[in-house]
Length: 332
Figure 1 (tube, rainbow, N blue to C red):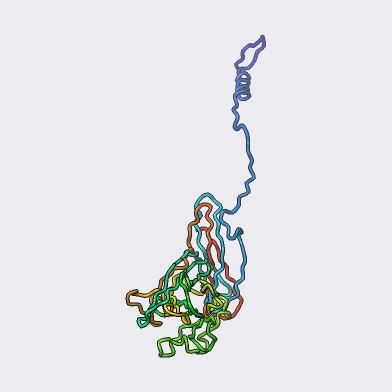
Figure 2: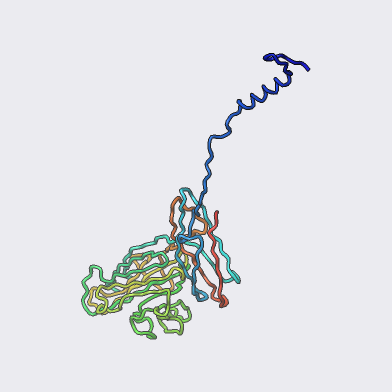
């Protein structure tokens, strides 16, 4: 073994090498990190339904009818949140339809014009149609700026069609349409083409053809027939959208009596040709109205609050039972 003399002593060369290696290891190391941060993060859900992640609701339904329930979907994030809806039902989905829609804000301002060529004077009435979210309302202003004379009365009606061709029903205040009920009674009258008189049963008093509105929970009507009880001449007819379609077709009909001329006559809106107006219950000129928009697939913008409705529709032949319907807001 080779040796060297250091400070008068004999030291093996191997020992010198080992000391050198140890010295380098002790004094030549580098730091791997300067500091450490440990964070406990609580993350909240970005999209909430009615400010919750889960809710329950109850609907008391009659087979054949539809019902809308209002909700708010909120995106609390600063980025887009694509969502879609899915649903299931127990014991079975058959005979049940669930849709997810928002109101369109549909509105119209119109004035009726005479449609009876044999009358020299029509009766213009102002009509405003308003979207109330889950309902739609027709407001009639029968006086406006007119100066009426006499102890008169008005008849008003809203006619609804689902295909733009055939009437489905009308809501009216029975201005002599049927003697089954007193004049001025608010009635729902279904279209029943069983009487070949051009009126298709709307004024025949057929059993089941005319139903007082106060027996129905989806129609609200206000306004007295006679000016003595309705000095401002205001009428409203409000329908729940759950009993309608996304797109409906409507017309209005106005009649008046008991006032001195020149304010007497019949009028309607719309009419095909103002210069040669006609109005026939079988061939009505309708106004088209889209009152709901589908949002079953939707992109929530940052911080957006979407007001929408869950629309439940039940088949008329649906078996009576308690159904559990679950709607899921899915990450799309």
